[in-house]
Image 1 (spheres, rainbow, N blue to C red):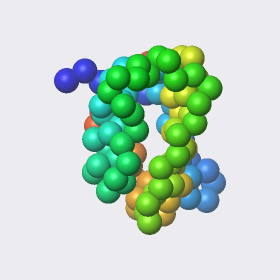
Image 2: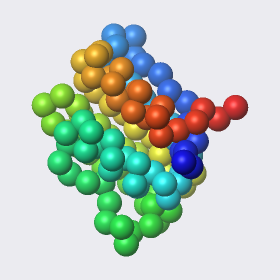
Image 3: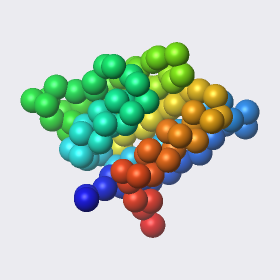
Length: 104
């Protein structure tokens, strides 16, 4: 399986917010939709006809009772900011890591 390139990740000091920085990739669309489904967010992130590379300086927002997620698109990177309880943040992190490889 091809993976996303994870550039960085971290948490705030209160363990209520995590961030993930990924390299811009067309794979993000498919994999992030799968993650949204697994955490029971009904909205899907994209229309298959809209290339991810065309999304620059845009923000998407997704929310359910357990997660509050911002997706920020730049020319070269995609940044995720995830707010939730610590146990949910750990679950989300494990899902991101399942679809990505840490850049060296």
